[in-house]
Length: 622
Image (tube, rainbow, N blue to C red; front, top):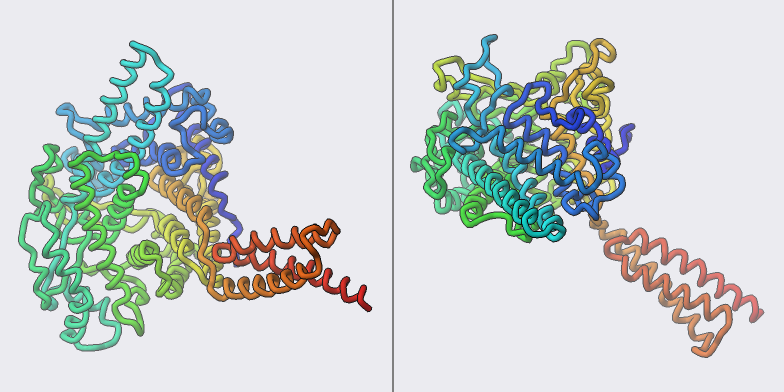
């Protein structure tokens, strides 16, 4: 059954822009920070709510004042006229860079107020200053969006200026783009040094946890190890031969008697080697993160890296040589991680490890959230390869997780599943206890619903089977309905996220005064994905294409037969009608591959019209 909230990405993005400005732009001043205070990650999320749609979707572009659409102007009216909007955004980018650049001109990626300690104490300044993959990934996306906007805005405005104002404007743009570029380089460096390939003996605790997940057939451990090693052999070879940058130790990945996993740690891992192609502190500082992959941070890193590989980045030539080298290194790591988790998720055909919910990680932790992340990586792999081979089973996993996560089922009193949404899944940052001699720190991630929505919309892009596509759209709309009920209603944060209490205990508490930029930014990403997905031409089932061809062929035959009854000089109504039918069939011939349903309809109408002509001619003969 379809959810109540139909996804309307254009309108919902415009509504989000209005809500952001109502909340943050007061008396001409931008107010930074949200529910969790102000920090390098939250403020990037806040700014991305404006910049990401503006640089990802042509209909929301803001870099050409004369081309800004009327509905975008209305949504951003507090900024002023269309000639003022671009300048306000430039000011905001400058303000963010200034806030998160240190006295030494080094970019700051500190966790800050997002950080949690495992006890009730307040984290120390040294702990708050530690950098995390979220900050690198979010800064990567922000810097790419900022560079896209700044380059377009510079081209559109510089032609309108003369002499000294033009020189000053050009200098301002150059300086800002250099600062944004420096932050981008540092963020990419941090992601390279946060990647890890973790090898382990099968009889170790991590090895046993991996075997527990992949052994769904009850086979012996030795048999499973041999089979898994054979499946992962291409990855082993590629990793051993190509992963060089920032690898501080020789990892024994070539040993097929050992198990391995790859992905991103929570920050720069303590075994990461310095990188000498850039002089940022991120390239040389010793990391604290335990050298093992976390599923959440792997997904976060992959999302950021995807922004580097878009066609528009290449067209605009946004990256300098150092950044291109880092981008290649990141793309390699993304490919390895995506192929690894996609392979492990489907290791046994009878019953996938992914279908054994919840997923257990190599450190022994387990959660439905980890199952969702592995499913998300699998879906992304299918989308990238334009494959539908295992889509139906993946959709089954998403549907089950949606029920277990109380997205498509009703939450109950004291429901443990509610913790997926508030406070979120707790990630223990192994190695953080060494930062300042304190206890281990924690990171909470409440994005179960937005991850579900984003990956479901991604899966729609490759769904050919009508039934599977309908299931995915129903799940997406139900998830949007779930998120809509968590929208803040009333107060300064009206129209933003997140008010989980409104879903779990309606009316029990007043709406939050400040938004969660963590969740609001992820809702925005979902809407951008929805906009792109809805704009694609979906591949049609072959059976529909065949049927359209059959009808078109029959209509062509009848048309040719009726053409025998009239000459080219004939000016009768029948000749005019046959010309219209021919035009309609020519249109059907253009559409039968991409829009066979439309071609089918046109052919049916042509057949009906031809039959009327045939019938009239036969009546005349009688």
